[in-house]
Every structure is written in C-alpha cells, then in structure tokens.
Image (cartoon, rainbow, N blue to C red; front, side, top):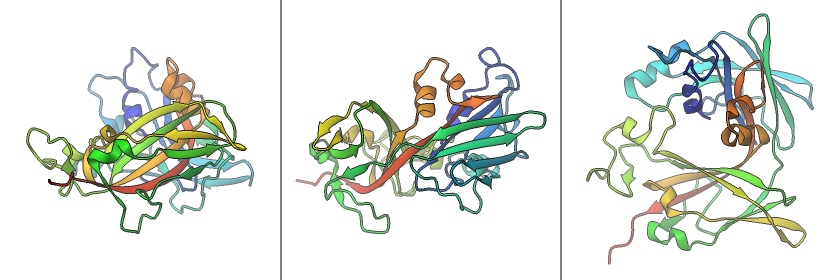
Length: 297
C-alpha cells in the first residue's frame, strides 16, 4: 500500500542501521497483488541512498492462515526498471503469484519472513464485514457504465451509510483513485493553465501515486440505528482532483494500521516482531462513479 512509508525509513539518525522494515495491508475479498504488495526491506543511510539498496528480493516469505493451518508462499516483484523509464507509481514487495489466498473478514493471518538466523513475523486480524447503503450515483459494478455526478453537486449528495456491529470508534481510509489514463485525465482545478497532466509522473507520483490516488482518513463513533449502528460518510468534492471515472475504496482499518498512522513513532507499534513498520488489514468496499464537468449554462 505505502511505498512512501518505506521511503521515509532512511534516516540513520531516526532509525537503527539495517533494521528490517515491513509495510503492507491485506485487503478483504482480495488476493495479495502486485498493486498492493507487502514491502520487505531494510533501513539505509539517507546519504547517497538508492531505492534498490532498501530491497530484499530473495527472502522466503509466506502468509500463514491461522484458521486453515495453511502456508501461502509469496513471490517478489518490483517495477523499478519500468519506473526509471516511464515514472509510474513505484511498486516493490511480495505478492501471491497464484492468487490462491483470498483475504477473509474476521480472520487472523501471520506473515513470516525467513531472514537467515532470525525471522520477522507479524499478525493481523481482518476487521469485520459491514454493509453499505449508497445512492444511484454510485455502482459496485466495475464493468458497467458508471453513474455520473456533476462536480458542483457532490457536496449535496446523500451520505453513504455504513452499518456496523458495535459502537466502538472506527477508523477508515478512503481512497479516491482516478481510472482515466493520464492523457485523458482533466484537472478539476487546472494546473498552471494546463487542462491535462503534462506526463505520467505529473499524474501519478512515483512514491504514492498522488494526485491520481488521493487518500483521506476519517474516524467515526457509530450511532445507534435500529438493531445496529450507523456511520454516515460524506463525500467531499475537494477529494476529487480530476474529472472522469473513479474508484472509491472504503477501508475499515485494523489496529496495526491505526497505530502506525497515529501513534508517535508508530513504526514501532505496527505489529512487526524483529523489525519495524506495520502489517495491517482492512475490510474494503469499492464504489464506482464518474465525476463530470459542470453543465454549461
């Protein structure tokens, strides 16, 4: 999920030299893919560093499914060479090549990394499933023609309703991901009078894919609603940066991810043993829509 989180781990003043680093999130109802790999590397000096110096491509890595008592071995992938040439979002880490492990709600998964003498390991409990109620302005079918929302009317939409099982405070990561190719993307607020990005890198930063991918964090205290509890998620027009088709990924995050993001020195509280960083998980729900230009009067 967050190569940018890894790149922050390069200051020898802040971190011990050659500390093992893990960052990654297991997304419910999904395999571990090249788009969301688990980064495993090490801290390095900020002086004359190169991203390949952080990478550990030859480790034995597997996910242990606690319930089924099965191991699922992961393979290494990176797009460093491609990134140097064309500057897309950098993806480095381990993924499930066969995609035979589908992450399930309310299950415990253990990551094990064999480094030689010692092992790095971490466990995450995937958050419970929740139900979502949304208006006709969204769809869950990626293969359909997406409903269209006029940009100026986004703030007047009915909130997305999320129904959960209890009223404990919950944290969500909302990912707004533009599905257009960079040549077809149109800035909502033109950049230096350019209506479209000047290049792929202008559209998709190498470290975190911003502005194509915009992430917003929210915490909620659910309200009682009949026999369940309700969260109202308002969509803000400022969270969209381009016109066009979008995937909106709603992710209820686990404790490891929350601690990493919110605690001081959170890289020590992300559930990693014999290393730093975090192994998180999320209960995800994807919606799709199209953000359209205001109608001309």
